Image (cartoon, rainbow, N blue to C red; front, side):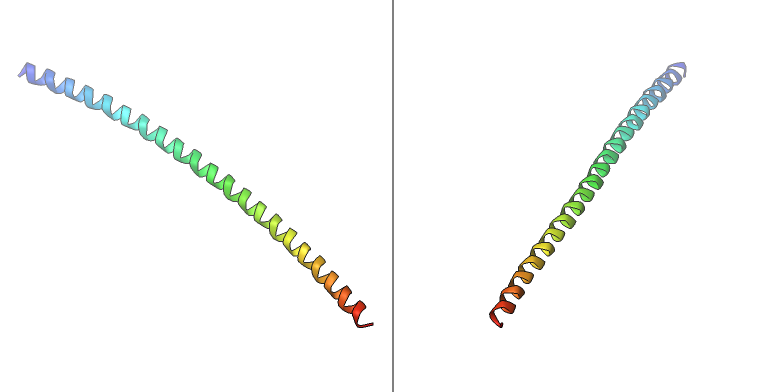
Length: 78
């Protein structure tokens, strides 16, 4: 009986050790996922900013082209 009890204590100690290792691994994985989420958020903000800049530039260029066409059309009709 004493041998079995000793074996049970060893098994419990080993399982506790494994449990702690798993908890540490879970914390590292959660930390990495948090880093990846943060990077995706920054990337999304950067893409949104760049898209707004490009759209603004394109609208400005379109306005300039339409203004030039209107000026040419006005000059031709005079």
